Image: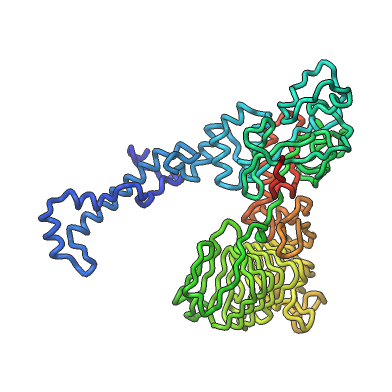
Length: 571
């Protein structure tokens, strides 16, 4: 056995990673120097080199760096047992989460680190409230990292009123008491009665109210926190099928999947419908909108939500060029308007941006990361280095007929022209074309784990260039573009919106085929929002709720567009 304090060769578990000294911690090199007599510091300053450090300073720097690492390691050890953030913002290292989950007997299902930490931090509280509406809502919002409104299925079905059932006063529902003397018709409008026939004289919907309202709910609408209450519960639903519809119906015996469209499935006593806002994607309704500044004024550009930097000496295709980097600093891509013509031979990188008009590059290359672009036209002739390298982006038109295009987690909606193409985990809706002159496909490249409009026939093993597939030709011969048939698909995705520039554009609808929702190499969704994990989040919520709901009860996720905007203000 190894000696005490020594880890054997089989101890493969990663240890505590020493962290550089946090800003709130002392720097021991400076402390050691301050503790020395002034005469020693003065003598050391007389022998300092060009860097301003003497031999004593360098020695104390070495000792101080080691002490800083010791202190940071000990501090990290103290917070490693805690998965949630402490008062100083520190928490355990991510690799420890599965071990803490084993201690608490928790099955982690969230695809995000924040969700997994919430699962561990709230494990005991959720068990104490197991099966309650409060626990269901907390679990869905923590694991899925999205806002939900929970309805109870047994409250959505038609019931026979019972005389012995106690009723809370009208004020408990936020409504005024029925004035005396009250007729039977007025008393039948009590909000606590299981009325099924809607009252055609009133409209039922959500209205904003004060937080201290007796029937107030608090929710997040498009990033804004607001209190609301349900008005005229027995009235005609103003928005049928949404979270604002609390009308009762006969039992729906259809068995929907875990994710359904509005109005399908919630009317059953054994179902718990959860309404959640549809993801907006890269084209958010709340995006900051700016105009492109003139190219000549880029160096002096400043904005709190948009940053520009110029990088000299960047290597591209064996050349040393300038790289221009534009980064959106908002929580959603920043919208930039105007046609942009770029003629300098350089690399142009765009991060977290929404390019709402045409971008034309006559020479050089374009890099996109978490962007939306309406139209890219790249005139650079280069087949060895990518003239377009896009990741986690939504593109409407991509025209690079003379160059190599490299795509990862990208959705292309309308046009894709490329001399050569490398694509992975993408949704490519248009036919692949080399140019607009004919129907030739890109002459070379590889497409894997992606959605294509067509999967080619296998090449002839004796003559790979034999044109045995008329839909897969390049200059009269079979194209060398390889499409992996075993992991690519031609299934047609269902998008929330196909109009570029509108919220939800390119976001997968729950009705999309399984080959699209789980076709990526890591089991996630294909396309531009792979790293947002919309599908995995919803699946994780259903898996987690299956553990806490009573036997035979199932959760139902319903996308509700009305949760994306604030309800009107009540009177």
